[in-house]
Length: 107
Image (cartoon, rainbow, N blue to C red; front, side, top):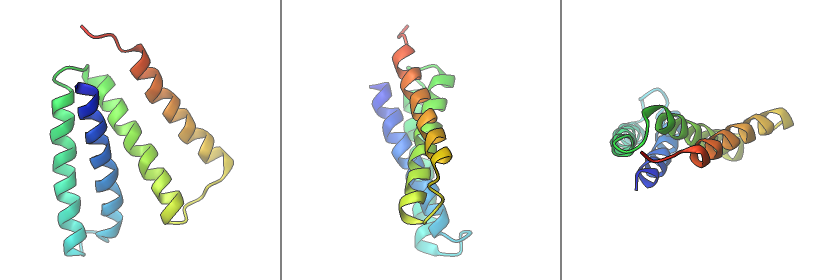
């Protein structure tokens, strides 16, 4: 179940990171409230995941999924650069996330 908590936390991580841009420096009330709520939920689910997973593994996966999701959202919706090197490095993060999951051994 811990991996599910980390995945949920990562989805909220992406949500708050993206909504942070929409909040325009916390000047837009609805986006700012959404950002704060999703930040809190992200940490709540992360804390559930680290009850069973090593903190280093859980944190790396959480931030990795958040970084990949946010970067892809930026490419798709904010017209951020989509050059080959950027895509390769995003892919490397994905490989790292998969590697951490595959090498995890429950205690």
